[in-house]
Length: 246
Image 1 (cartoon, rainbow, N blue to C red):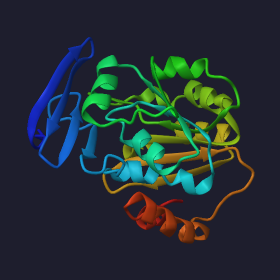
Image 2 (image 1 turned 135 degrees about the vertical axis):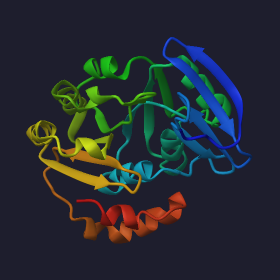
Image 3 (image 1 turned 60 degrees about the vertical axis):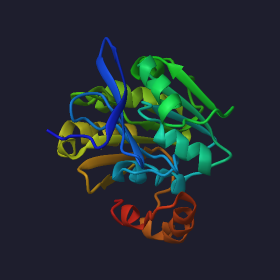
Image 4 (image 1 turned 90 degrees about the vertical axis):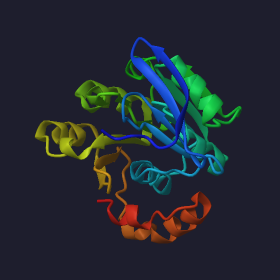
């Protein structure tokens, strides 16, 4: 069983179990269970994404210039933190089921107090059912529980709801696991709902899906110059992640 580094500095329980925060001096970690690591933040740079899958998800910002972003699943808030710090023209709505996660993200993970940020305490799957149609430019879905991936974000109903919420050329970005990539039914559903589906298999075994109904397919090689510029802003290289995008 994996042991998180540092010492436990906070722990609260709700009906779904524990939510713990660990600190090793340099970084903080959010955990939902024994040995489980949900988020990691560098205290000196809260907007610096640490995980390969987060860095692969942010590739969508090379494909479009969104103003209205929805993030399903808060965790420690590293993704919205990155978006708010580096993309001044975006507004971000985050939907998080667990109230304690929202409290911990603000208190221990430096989630910014920003008028562009709206946090909603709700079930993300239910929220998406009732989301206004055609207004979301990018929808990030990163739903995990202590037992693993929230598989309902890979169903026909979820994809239909996501498609309805997106603008005509909007993007759905899902963080899944590589083991789901070979499921023929899921791949069929993705291609039924979206004209173009990009994928990225990360070094840590995640399967990042970027899907859109926009009219133009983009070749990853055409994004290299933009990726180099954005890498300087974000503080890490996007080139390896872009090369794996297919």
